[in-house]
Image (cartoon, rainbow, N blue to C red):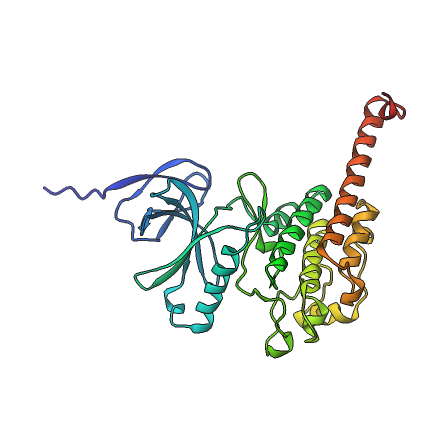
Length: 333
């Protein structure tokens, strides 16, 4: 009499941490749902010396996995490029560009790339792990992100973009989905697949790159693109997080794109009156239609956001003191 029972293997769910048994003969990268939280669980796959343990995100270029580097004994993220794209020169160039751009930048708030390799015909990136969700996830979950958190993200990502600019790079696709959080809730700028050198002439490109809800007007008009275009996209991203609305809304994408050029911006404070005036003003300047009307540098933008953050904290502490001990207590020594 034969034993028809299938072999089982115990794995940890990356969603809730529960230990569960899954079929030991589960094909590579195939998943089953965790019985406790419903998160997709897969059998660990050894890829070179990286043990791929669970999928974090997937997109047009490939899938990012939470993985363990068995050589250096650390957690990492491994981005596997789709095999069918390995023969696509444009896709491969974008993948290589992302690897080289990130590898050349050393900043706390830019995702670190450890290596870029090919294995059995499949290209892959090994990166710093940032698996605590994205700013986009926070907007979807919370509706509006607290002002202090938004300012912190703005200050840190502006600094990251300034570092990229000093290395002659523009990001060109700043959006909430490209700002991830690590386990310490530190924001990390990702996806330099559209990055290019700052001095190249944008007129030479036939296509307009970027995400419609955050794209700068000059890019739509095929005018000169520089760091001020990234600044606009960052400000649009912060506007969305702060108010729960993108800067310009319309029934169609074409309407959204046209609004970037023709529709006056509604200041954030008019959308959400509890926002402080300095924050609203800083974002409104960075979202000016004309690049010349925006901040002249990332330092200026960061200083405006930092000043707004300081004022917000002063107001918060003052209000807390008034509520707890009366109107004069905050000024006592």
